[in-house]
Length: 496
Ligand SMILES: Nc1ncnc2c1ncn2[C@@H]1O[C@H](COP(=O)(O)OP(=O)(O)O)[C@@H](O)[C@H]1O
Ligand SMILES: [Mg+2]
Image 1 (tube, rainbow, N blue to C red):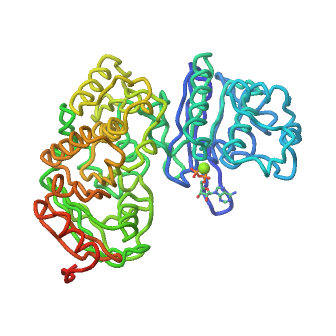
Image 2 (cartoon, rainbow, N blue to C red):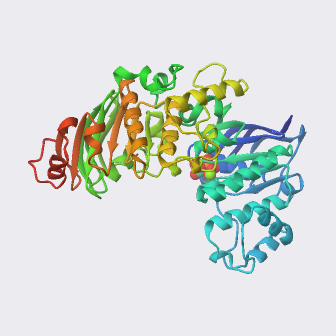
């Protein structure tokens, strides 16, 4: 049953359209994600639904009855409680004083925090409390109103994984009790693991409601960014059933990453191309520009100059979403950043179905189990600790990060020191996995802090020194001595 139904809700600030026309339907007993790029209107919708601002147009119904949410206290009375994107506490007042300001029972908040096993000193000034704890206080305060619908605006962005996990537990509890959560996050792994449905906003309009687990991260990104920047057509291609032949295989022949005179941070003008089926190494001493290179390609940083293109199409990622939609995905050294560490292998992989039809259909648990099982087998993930990814060995965690992308589709894998801290046996399996991905048509850029990996893994190796490419070696010729010479800038600079 629908708990909340917003239709064609709009909001303008003078000439600025914050929300053009957004519709949203949240069922009772549902965790519903509200997704969209920055500026899509998510926070504006939350503020409208909780009485902080008034809508210019549209309707809002609660259990089929029209409501006018005229103020935050009215929202609270009808069972809508928000946690806003920005901490809603006065820094100069104590935690307890802050809570009294909003007419919530201090003991109830204390009780909620205790239930979440979060320890807060209520006599401390809010300004002295670390941000993650402030977020948990905001959450406890919202929970203390015992709302039908919790609206959580990017609450997990500032939380370490153990606290994020307590938020997930609250969301699951709300669902179990037939209540609802509207959940805003940029972390797509959270959306896939936690949310029953998702409504996507783009430029102030709702552009679709989907089942995240059915369609996967890359397709979600397509919805958020819209068709214009359209490599979209290619990306919508059907994906082969076998896990190792992901979207990579479908687009194999075409993919090439071209980087021309790229400049950012300490990267002082770098050019190279990476072909489908190739593993290209980047060897460098600490701090020669490799971090900046990977950050730019993954959309974590903006280039200061130069050009990038994928398959002839210009690439200027402003956000990781842009990179993902262009098929560039990052496998970082710290894999726990890419995963939900306290969730199961299954939840982390979540076997998205990457097809155009049946997107709205119910999740078929047996089908999902089958897909996860086949990914686990293909990647030889040791699942003795599969109930919690953080209990897996580092190598198996890293395989799970790769498995997530396999399920979602990619063409270019950006591996930044992917085997750091991993045992030798598992390292070998990861090398073999990367080779199989390349054979299936993926393009792989590979940085490692261990020189011995380059000849084992790469077809070709570039050396970076002082932000420039100082050498290019064939994979089998990339022995330690040759690499070191080039990495110290001790060879003639090659054309770049
Ligand atoms: N008070 C305001 N005055 C003017 N423009 C605003 C105001 N609040 C939001 N906007 C604009 O409305 C758009 C949507 O903002 P917001 O709802 O915060 O997006 P999101 O939460 O999805 O990132 C943005 O372009 C933003 O700049
Ligand atoms: Mg926002």
